Image (cartoon, rainbow, N blue to C red):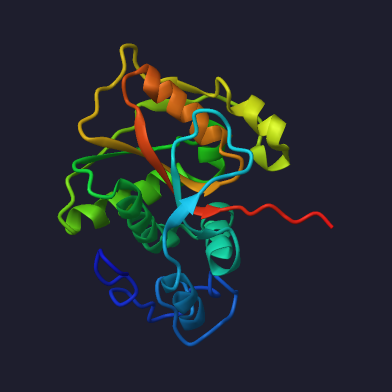
Length: 233
């Protein structure tokens, strides 16, 4: 990786456990689950501002590693939906790069991941974003960042967003999160929300509103991938 030290050189799979998470190619060796070509594709990505159009009210500034496409998209799908939990380490390290770009010079930083619903966590054998957050925080601390992770929210049952349109996502996100305890949770430094994919922004906007009610106004949101609108022909 760039500013936070080497990512791909510190762990190489000596025994091929599966196909490449990014392109499904079977090669003699994988580096943290990815083949050399996909490692190069991921290394070339740079965090940049991302914003859905239209953006929902109260959406904080968002920074994404890249578009939801190619090796990044396939790696996220392999991690979330195909049980490749070992990908939490490289994906979490990539998320740390996005946090660094989103936070800028702010110190200390408090990371608040968007929580999974209980149903989603059971289906994925644990909260997938919680795993990414632990690796991202560890990466940042190793680079000397003062980082705290807070999990002040719980997610209420809601429909699977994959089958919903923009209006449905907004309706599902509204009221989908609650503070774990009354009175709020004070956080030192700047708050950065974490999520894996930015689509309509409804979830991050809803989370931001709940946190603001507890005195924790998010500075920004850091995500791995942002979906892109398909052009109308």
